[in-house]
Length: 480
Image 1 (spheres, rainbow, N blue to C red):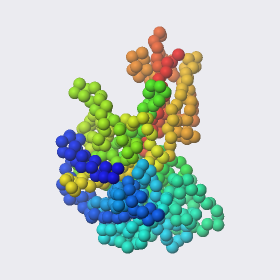
Image 2 (tube, helix red, strand yellow):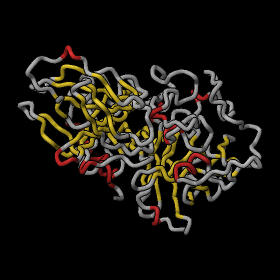
Image 3 (cartoon, rainbow, N blue to C red):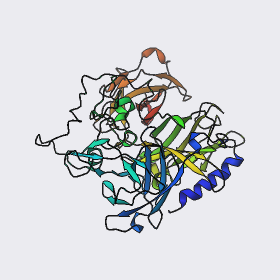
Image 4 (tube, rainbow, N blue to C red):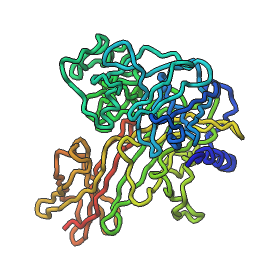
């Protein structure tokens, strides 16, 4: 696996030169194309650097939440390119399966907190040590640690956010003395200037809204209100519905305007499902446009994925996916040349994203031996989508939904669609919440002596207007 993404980047560059799906010329020297090379090393707690081969280290910019991403080689070494040494960063460790595994933890003076953010001095990071859910610095030579704090109610140096991810039970004893800079989150009396973790940064500008030590772009519940972001209409806790806002963690101030991923399950033969992922991102127009837009992610999830390319006669042909997104008007993007890049990929064997699994939208810059990427993380929520079943009562013209497509969570919507004998959709019901389990079909859409079919679709809407996070279709059944 080592070197696979370096080889992929070179292959991508070659593809970009000859394809029409490139994003533009990156020859400009604006702020995206400036910076330093920063090197580092990481070892396991046993002291072995070789054991960390294939892990992924993420250098996350505090202000922009854009990332530099590096794969650890067989010697435990990694390199970040084009790093802005004036910026503030934290580190996140991703497993070879691209699961969020560990976050940076630096002991602080305040009890029950840790520090995570730093500035880089020079071009070499201190040696990192992987200790299960956290990574620590062997020393602080080469960095200046910032004062930002994250909660650690157990005092075990494991920030509460990553503790929740890996299933550590947090202590809620009143005997724990929290620093005065943190207070109980007031999730009822929210305002647009709310600052849940009392760090002096408004939620809308805070890379870690709830102060739990897990940055928003890796946190399934940004504001700590016990509702996953994909079901939370106000995930940033500013008392304003997310749709229409550009402050939450799917929007970025550099490189791209926003990112979105749609997971879809469609019934196939034999009671199984075909699953797919559709990736979308809207690029920002700037002086330095990337050569290409690609996806980095788990080999298990994305290997052997297929895309339907159109043949000369317009027929879809399953083709191995090259990890590129396209702006050609044929790839789920709106239209050619509008800087909306997308691609729908069919996953092999009905695969589904794992809990807290990450994919990165890569903007690829440079040429020759000087290829570098600016990357934007998308983290899947801890959901296990399931199939749904339905039934129809001809007497009452009512379709009933059975099963729970998202487990115990009922904050999804579902619709029923009716098709005529030529499989043309003639009706779709208004969206209905998951707590309501029946939809009545109007009588006036039917003609006598014709046979109709229906199917049900359960969905979770994205916080990017007009997009969907999850879609699960039922099997098509007869209305009889």
